[in-house]
Image 1 (cartoon, rainbow, N blue to C red):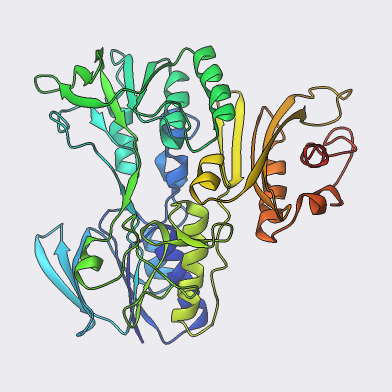
Image 2 (cartoon, rainbow, N blue to C red; image 1 turned 180 degrees about the horizontal axis):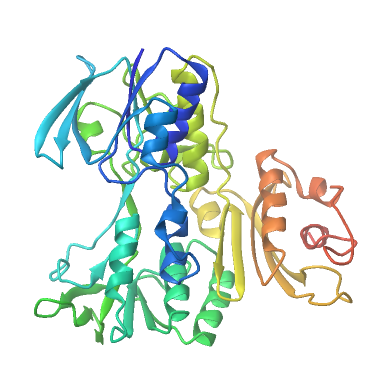
Length: 442
């Protein structure tokens, strides 16, 4: 069996390893348009901050490992630009030589990921304007952070923007975040965003909200960011306004796309085109709470979907069971997490919900280093089912979000949560976990 995988990172190589383990007869070719395989994109902000001293530390397996130990034909700088599903052929450009290549397949996995969105404004190609998605991106930003590059402007106040801001402040830079939204971290509810604003101000980050970038100015290198309301000095700009799935060639081949541009897949990671699969940041994820196809491009989903796709290609039936929308991030002294629906999502879906806010402690209040833990819950008014949880604190957020994510996965009610048998000892918890304390207040 001839297997072609487009994309050599999380989804693609998770799939490749499943095929290697489950089908010894498979001949696997991977086309990666960059030069690096299987690297931890989520670690890139921490390389900028110096916590990760070398980008090589972010590489899980080298290209030589895939080639020599697993027999995978792992190619670099090969960008697929065309898919013929009738002839079962992919075509593209070898960027190292400029020559075209063509490859037939029996099974094809599209794992092309997503690319950063760059606003289509004047000056976007000036030196000093960056995105952060790949190891070369991170290395270019680090090289650009000279001692005299002190004023850094970040466009976008989401996960990447906030993580980059934290790490650049810790490198001694003066950081400004510009966002067209009303608040930073707008995937969270307003109460959580307020705590993010407080932490940003405490750390000396200027945040400029409800302003839209109109253009970048400078002779050869960026010097100013011009919005619809003001002009800001900038030595370096990092654009972090979101990503878009890399699916243009798939659309041209008749592959069905979600409104987000992601490839629509079924639980087996199959597309509507025979023998063509998709996984990772270029594909949809079924949301178990919304009961709809969603687009939440995260490394956790990419690895799981890749594993499922590879197993099915190899002849071992598996299904992707969906997501509940869990995420977590560090922002200076805060840990910020969420799972399930936000108020905005519940409202948009016309789900009758009841919110509840609660401030507890990370562990027993009398035990040293107990910290405040803010939580916000949503429950279904009619069924009592948990719909979502958001949490902010110095410690203990991850545990509560993961418990809530498990409850959401199994469609548990608020009453179910109150009855959970959760671990307790003073250094780790109170006799009632904060999540359960919140549940009792409904």
